[in-house]
Image (cartoon, rainbow, N blue to C red; front, top):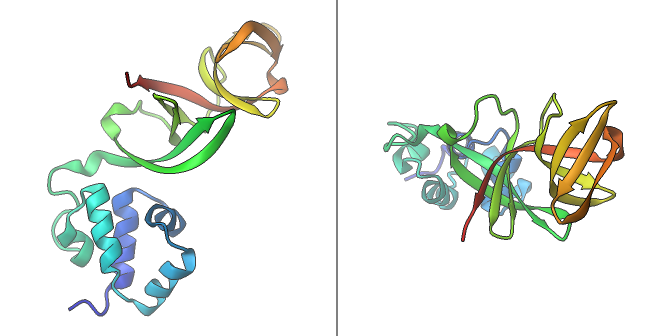
Length: 188
């Protein structure tokens, strides 16, 4: 039945996941870029990936396959796919994506991502213009962690929490601020 229409279906899957690139789609589907490029070039319909996308995103199978109807029949147009990372032993590791309802995100986030550490999930923004008091994802001498940050006079900051027994003051340039934390959810 579907011997063509692969390009359009692949483009619709990118939209359904909320991605900006086909590379992100490849990572989500667990395939190489060349595999997807082959199907795209030959316009070969990717039925297996379309089904996977429908199951993972809740997008309408009819819309994914044909472009007819609405993407989300149940009103899930407000869902965004956040890149997800795991924080373990001071290192961040990419670990797929998290589908998230946009209504729970603060407005104005430019590059929201999800960071999980043990039983806690953080929603962060990797793009920020102001450095203000609050929780931050910070790289301190090669070890990444979630810390409390407070601004103090003359371009200094005070870092505490995150397993640090004694808070310390340093210049802003002495550490690398990776992301501002906007939300924390802990599962008990």
